[in-house]
Figure 1 (tube, rainbow, N blue to C red):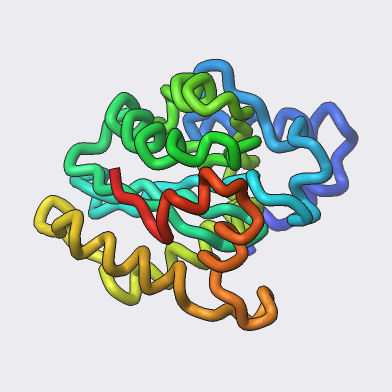
Figure 2 (figure 1 turned 180 degrees about the vertical axis):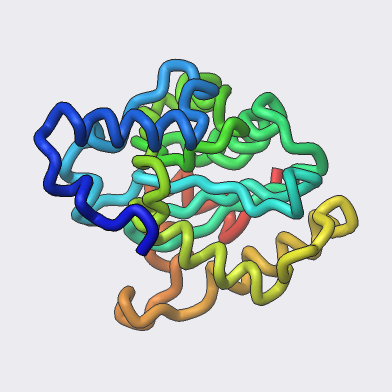
Length: 211
């Protein structure tokens, strides 16, 4: 393998330099007030409680158009909105539309390091949640979201121009996935788990919402 793994044996200062190099390559300086996943409460990892979300964009080409997806970690419950143009402001507005009706069930959001999440603090303030960012090139730290994105790609393969996808089409896909039984949930659906564990007010929000 080019470069090998010898860096893993380096003393701590050099290893820190390596991680700073990865951070620069990932463009993390584009995200103001970024808080790394290492500061996220350990309870989030256990998936015992509703309210911890993962967020990711699904993009066409070099950010020509896309979706923003949000998946609740315990239930696998999906929210999604189209992004006809990829901007930090537009992404934040879409996330707020999706999460605000459910803000009582939003405690944290773990995000990808893309610059489209640069306005994450607007979302956090709107729903009273904390935002965290994965380590560079560690998509496995948002495994629930990554797996769900793979399911979405079965309906919208790579190359799909999301400017040509209607909100109704996206809503149908979200509803299908939220009502698909999952083995890890004891063959319950994400909608059953999410809505069943939320307050009565949240139950009236429905199985899917497209802002």
